Image 1 (cartoon, one colour):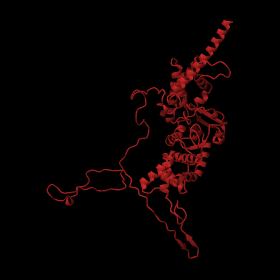
Image 2 (cartoon, one colour):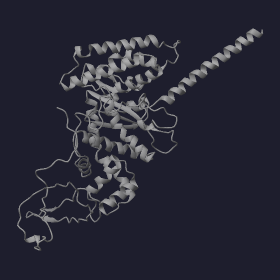
Image 3 (tube, helix red, strand yellow):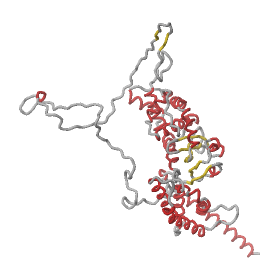
Image 4 (cartoon, helix red, strand yellow):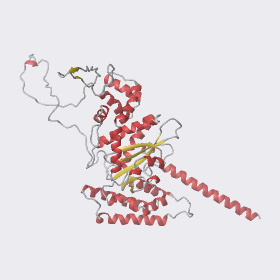
Length: 471
């Protein structure tokens, strides 16, 4: 009897130890998560209790140099042969002999300097008087009001000042009160906070038609990237949040505010896609979208492989798989630079063998947890994905129009995190939707090489920039 009691107690304690060990492993893994082995932003690496990512190679030890990278566009002040203005400079005062230098002989230019500057800005009030004229036929014609003017007899801020407000609010996340203060410092006139805030809705209305066209062009794109990120919107506790979704290409950006449910995904552009390739981060809702092909973001996979290397420090397969995947991405970039449509077989054969062997070895080492409903370890789930969805992992090799990562979508979403760091929580869902309607228009215009301020001003004056429609 006593032996049975002890055996039962021993089994109970053994089960508790197993549960505590599993709990400890989960906590240790959560603490070890950083920007190097997960999707966490680098700004969270120095939070209390967090394990920072491994140190990067010292300058010269790795392939990437500090500063501007090879092939990246540089920025410098270039000498112009056609300056806007030329001002001659002559010596002033008297010579040592006592003669005034104003009477000296001009020997010509000995040195030239060019200064790039902006004029001091002061807001001016311009009154537009609309005249009426009578034709000899008897018909009377009245002049049209200037673009951006209000009702007759009222005073309105002009389109340039309006564009500055929208630019500061949306493109640079400046709070309303501070935006009004900046306008005052720049121009000498301070608009009211209410007027500044109302510019968001006014600009969003002005670009509504453009966003409808951008949405249509995104739907018809053959390849697009998608991502989603949580943002705090509306009243309520910090735990209450919305999700900002983006669908984009290198030339288009379209945002949508909702949550992470399939209902939101169905209300976005996804149900209208047909035979498109969608680059994403393996979130399960993307796999439920019918009629699309998938390219799993290799940047997320590389971070997961780095996490596996830390979870299995004695294993070779994580490093081998990551190295082979990077080599395959490099082969795709090289082939794209040569103008090829796909990576040649001989350029990827060796790395493809290394990648597949690493996955095969990993599956033999990381055994599945028994039981049909058992939760598998992250390393096992990653390996099963790399094996079962190899076509979705390496689709970019066969079609070089497909980017291997969803970095474009992440770059388009990054300003929303900057906005959140500045403002904390956006109180109005309507204002937030308006902000990102403007943001999508501005990002698309910027991707096409259009000046952002010009795009804002043109939209506010009723002539918004429009993306070109592919032939």
